[in-house]
Image (cartoon, rainbow, N blue to C red):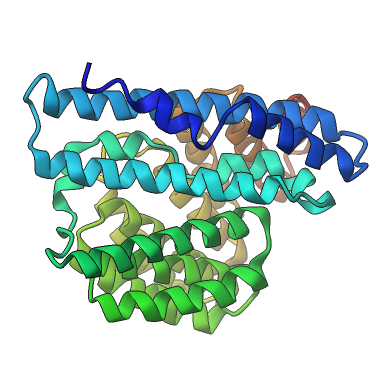
Length: 342
């Protein structure tokens, strides 16, 4: 079978040797829950790896065996899957040199990495700007994507200052290529990290620039992420409510063109609710948090780690309106779920 190479590709990133190496690094930190975290990481990476192999096989067979998809689409999908595998590889690099902070954040970090499923969605992939025909430029773009994968790993593990200096260089390099999709990715990452380190004005500038690049590059999914981050920074940090509202409406409109948008929708709802809370509109915020909770649980299930965060946000919103008994019940569920995962 011409499409049987997925497991072999995955093996280069995740295998017994690497799993043991991560476990050794975790245990060397002396954190009391190190071996439990290593076990949980191993299960999560294996699950993610299986999903990746399924996606790889599916897109390959659609083109090479069933003849349903063009070579152009396959190239785009494989580039997307390569990026996902690279991001996982770079995060595992950090795990192999773990400190206490990394062990503590490891499960969350894995949860935050994008999964392979969007790569399989042909309609979305075909909207992306084609790679340039110049092989030298393509090589540079691949190098930038590898750098961005490292920044993504630093971001999800919470090493923001290091991530910021790396991503600034990646933005400059991406600008020189003139290839909008990679510039959009770089600027979105930069804006996200600037939010994390409290540089709200710089974040708005980066994210607005990201939006222009993302529009040009045709990445609808990333557009919603960028808009959502603009809602957050302008609504909760800068308290520019009209502007946040506008971004929110724009993001809502963009969601309609995206398949399996449950998680994106929940993230947007949670940001909108946070802005309403800053405005002191607690009852409206509660309604929206309930919607976000429904969105995340229907997308990922009420037993997922993501659901524990949604439970917590819902409990906060209930607490804000004085519904203490109901808030306590949701806090308890959130705590139980997290204890199971963490």
